[in-house]
Length: 265
Image (cartoon, rainbow, N blue to C red; front, side, top):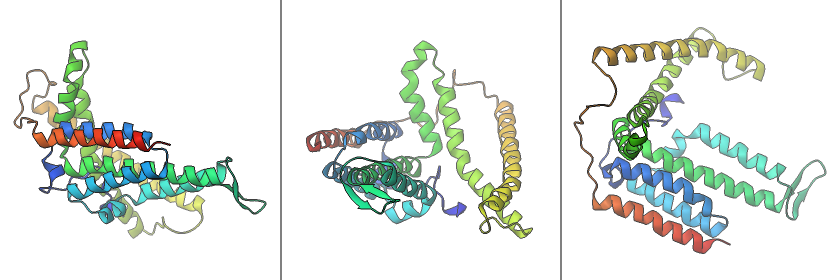
């Protein structure tokens, strides 16, 4: 399962989404996260879903690939859906079995919240799938540059986020290797009571944390040996250029915002 996860992975391609400026993609995702909360009915969520599907299509990534790579998130969304159905106590009663009562508003909120969560996960995943970690670093640092006037560490923050994104796939691969090594030694992590499966996770976490700290130390030493002293005076090999397609991408969000406001009930 680990090799199929797509958290932090970059897929090289030549789609429209790949060619966008990283600053435009970062702004696109941040704005989308804000305007998705304008949707409050089926028509509005349908428009937001259609917009998301169009964005996925323009990125060259298939929805099937996203769903396969986001299985853990899908489980969380499914749990959220079930909890919302059983714990929301508003509206007319749809099902009443004595020990279980399902309300109309609970079903409605479960569908809307799960859809919102799913669209947010899809759109944020597209950012890392279509943008290299170094491009995300450059784009984020460029967007945060105005804050340097108030001594905000824009370069350091962007670098930390880039390193975190870069090491997510590495840690996933490391987890898969440790799991296979433990299974080869007779450890069973997929069957038995929940208590036994939790105990089997402990031998997995210890070597994973040890390897993570070792990688962090090696990275720190490598940066120090190469003379890294922060962002002051550093030049960039790749210069960011804003194109017309980047402006059109952000204007599409303006159109989506207007549409969601008109569809609000």
